[in-house]
Image (cartoon, rainbow over all chains, first blue to last red; front, side, top):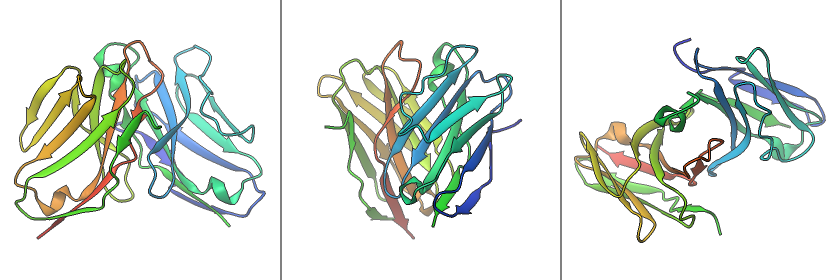
Length: 116
Length: 112
């Protein structure tokens, strides 16, 4: 697609429920990133997918968080047993794999998660 | 200590003013420096990208990098109300393919 598409744009859930957030990257971008942005905070790295390599999961805050990327394209971030501190905007970004383009991330508009 | 420090503001200036936004970083391996602009309820978008010390100019925007003091700046000339946004600096080390390290962002408001 023309840009990075994320859904849902807004999600309100109850504490303890599971949520799934979807990211559709730019066609041809083999690198995909998930970040979390809490109110007034910078971007916190969560996970990085690069082609067929094993994902870098080092930023996931707990084992309640997981992500997968199917067919090298669409990615889903799953948060199990949501907690109130999970409330944030979850941003997905994609980039080219190599060269200077690998440093240029294109972000989606984010999925705003509110856990009541 | 965070790897990238940025004054969160908020910063409020009158239209037409020159704006200076700054970041410091601690990782001497950082070689790529970026500024992203984020409008309210939108994702960040790349504004400026440089990989060397010195200045890079693009219209009303100038990015400045001083590697000796680990200091990066973004200058906005003739600021406009449409420049009102949060500005995030981001750094990356070469060979570190996995991610950028972002500052916390500076919220800028340009008053008409």
